[in-house]
Length: 122
Image (cartoon, rainbow, N blue to C red; front, side, top):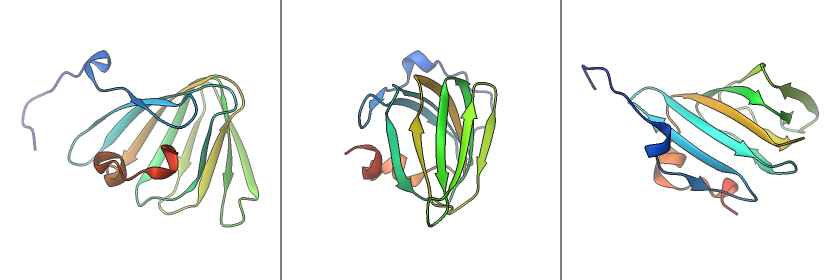
């Protein structure tokens, strides 16, 4: 645990190239994770779930989320909107246009830290 403020520069954090054109950068502390994610139109994050609660804040573009076990609830999140994805809720996302968004996870995603997030890498 840090006892002093820490300044982090996004352009100095590693850029991960994921499936399709998806790229991400993320930073983490002991209790929270923040990520910048970019999608090209048509990029998708397949259905998955995680322990962490997730805020998805779309800064530019639009993402269509399918939610639930049957993937039958749809929510479109546009620039200026935030979606809260509860812990362990099955969800997927499709970029309806080029999209830049921030994800906030609590607790941090262990699969992102150890590289076992295969659903985003294939």
